[in-house]
Image (cartoon, rainbow, N blue to C red):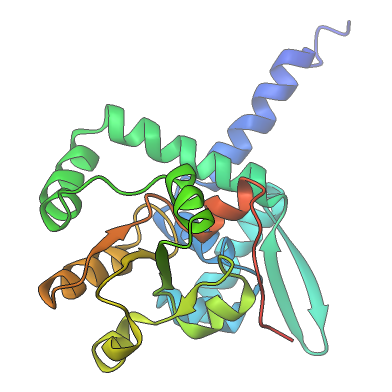
Length: 225
């Protein structure tokens, strides 16, 4: 082996380091979370993440160089999507678990915000599947409607958090309601649980979100054209 050339192990580590650097920014992690819901244009990502177009484009290019995202041109617009949904969502999940274990700041936020708002254990995918087989549950998707259209859990009702208060009559009080949103750190499902319990509904939260459900290979539906 040429001593000036990196060893195979070093070459692999260099590639892994590039991936680690690509996710080493909060905006890029948020962009990956948004793309976990389905493909988006740069414009829509810029708006949903409250970033400038130029800043969004720059972060996406970094993610693209690390092959975490890929593009598709439709007319004059460029759309981004995850390059390997299961692998990228798995990477984000592993990052979250390490953060919850190792970082006191993450643990504090989990305690002060998430656990304080919902002290009941969230339902696992397996528990929800069992409830669905028995027809004992109403599932609501509290993400924005355009994300629901891109993909959602089978039979779920699109009920964006902003519309929740006006659509309570559509929810049965005699049945368990399960709310889900973008992922384990998405606050919308926590807010939905708090609001619905305050109205007397029996409601639980799915412990993960749509991207993790899809990454597990479970059935999904789409209403987008």
